[in-house]
Image (cartoon, rainbow, N blue to C red; front, side, top):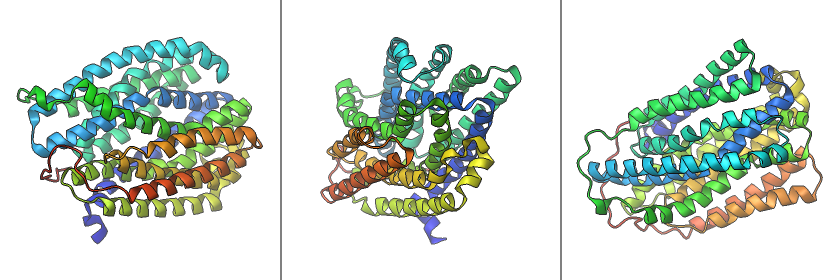
Length: 427
């Protein structure tokens, strides 16, 4: 019970429970979709999700920057600056959203050819999700910066729940892939609207312009966060991109289920990073060391990975058959390897979140280097899924070692102008 009195573990437990519930709904969603679609269509769907994740990298950068400044304003009690900053972020996201939709439409013919998508209608429907995908990280950044993890947990559960309802609607009306993609856009918009109401800064006093960061300052802070997000999102989805490019449509769809199960380790363990980020920001604002927080997070993540890999090794084929059916069993023997890969990814993710809460920026070098090494090594070697897993495991291990070595050079220096007293907010 002593462990749950620790703020990191206690708040992580709240996020982890919601992640487990959301993860259960997500994995309920995926078997439904996998059975509704053909294996080739399911592979298309997962690749479209990956494309959307890559296109919305700037939005994830906004989440990090928003959390940084909201944590600061909450700690100092500057409601005026908080309100002014949040409104500025919403204005910028609106402009970016329009530009990104234009870029998406321009690149659509290229994506159709490169990823061998069957039609353009599904891609057009995917564009409906772009505005919500851009504004949601800013909204969640406000909630995370306030450390309101209960509300964050509700969003974790509501998102997959709406997706499941969408699958049933698609099944009833027989729209299959186009229906699933279209309803996903509508559902994500509904969740974004609800979360926006929670994140509003009501009746905030007039803001001092000097306390609101300029666009140039936001770009400066966001540059290395953007680079980190490019690395993290590419590495999370790089296996899907490689498999979709080099293997047949059916094999890519079959591998997609194994990749999804392996990423469950990250989806559940990533709750540690969500809690760790604002806590490390608060520690550095007070000019205090945050090494103990990171150590606890890494220890918990390692335990989650060991348990998950053991379950995958013992029950891999049974899990795949139960959730997705016998036609997806082709790669079930490598499920434990995907667990290892994404367990290592989760450790790497926690370390990157730590560095994003500090002034250190060199951590992006090994992260981006891994994005080049993995596809290059796969292109030069045998085009098998098992070989891809070994390449990713080795590359992630090297990145983790380099990041741990960099941690020794981090000094407890203040990221902002002066130390502050941070009061732990309510959930």
